[in-house]
Image 1 (cartoon, rainbow, N blue to C red):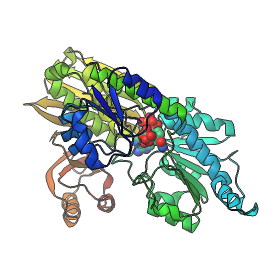
Image 2 (spheres, helix red, strand yellow; image 1 turned 45 degrees about the horizontal axis):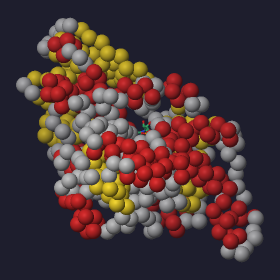
Image 3 (cartoon, rainbow, N blue to C red; image 1 turned 180 degrees about the vertical axis):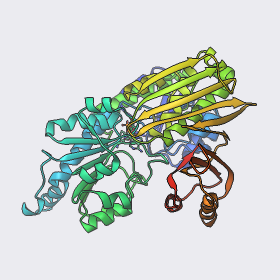
Image 4 (cartoon, rainbow, N blue to C red; image 1 turned 135 degrees about the vertical axis):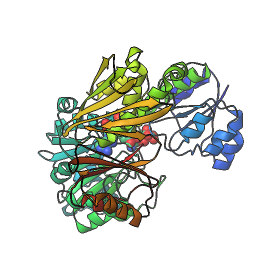
Length: 524
Ligand code: NAD
Ligand code: MLT
């Protein structure tokens, strides 16, 4: 067996690998060189700089496993690997503490201008007046994303006597209280915080989370830290806010494009930076390297890996038996997570009719997978679904009813959240997934992957036409439309399937129509 390592990993990891295989550490390989060499190797180990593209995967004739020494697999074409049956593994928790400590270090450096003062004195100038700082004591820290790293940051800053507020809709209020954090909306967090730190993954739903609108809401002279992922903050807009004095300073460990030496933020003296060093400690690198080395060896020996990013949600034999309902519950989970408002606290999964007469653990895992997949880089599967929900303090209750009124089987997924409960239900007929209930509305939507617009409104003449005008003007094609109403001219739900996503300004235009109460775009 031969293993190729293309970025530095600690000796401890190389030691574990060397007991089972020949390990070639070849740092700084150009893409073309990697393509030429990869065909000889059974395993490839990278950090964030090596781009494991579909070409690399194609050229890796013997590859069984690609390992990412860290969390983010954004540099690996996971889909291509999955198609070729190559396992992708990562180390999602081994560098958590280091990332949290780096965040605190960045916050203190920002508050006290340490990098700027250091450069000034090393440059031969003794000056004190330019570097007046602020204390952390009695200040409010806003943490966006309270998963592994965000929670550790919260625990650490208690010692500084800060008030800590947080925003993370996918964690229960009890969990948050236990780590000393006051849960607030994103808007409240932006308005109240003296320091803001981001700890969430970069997904389509979180890209540009802090943009022009959010930066207009912040408390004047806020300081912002990003040790999570570049792209969560709009760099151009942040620079404008720094130049206008709305933001007093920013500390960035991560950038939209990495490696990065040309971000617009590098122009500002109010910005302090590190080159993605959050996980760069001896301890974290040893933990990460051993973690992934053990997994690579496990896969090469034919055993399962602890953190397989592309592990199937459920084993193939379970999928063969329950595939259609597994897919249906995944879709229902995705749908409910995008319709729910506020802080989640519990999830109810109901099985009515035939579907409840079998082992439902795969359906429960698929539901949780659908709800949580857009919120974390951790892969939810049959083995860890319950643990992931429990870690977030989310209560999961399953119930069964042997009969079902209108279908042979029906699965309902209800989420209880601070702003109310949301329930969706669906079934499988002739191999197709039908979404048949959204809260009190009964309808029949055949699931096809794509964009859906859900419009809560009061039924009245002309509204469907008005919505169509707006989508038409925006060149957004409607492929399907359905309306469910409680009574004529009463409360109603309009659902449109769209060939293209709706732009935010078009969504706002629909929301501004009279008798429209809420407009939500969902991607399924
Ligand atoms: P995690 O999955 O444990 O936590 C992410 C949290 O973000 C979850 O609790 C999730 O519910 C929350 N979240 C998702 N979408 C949200 C939204 N729209 N609004 C608010 N909260 C939302 O991940 P983690 O291990 O804590 O890592 C956090 C980030 O830090 C990841 O992007 C990771 O890649 C990055 N990271 C960077 C470094 C570094 O070297 N700079 C090191 C470790 C981790
Ligand atoms: C990660 O994804 O684990 C971090 O960003 C750290 C790293 O890439 O080393």
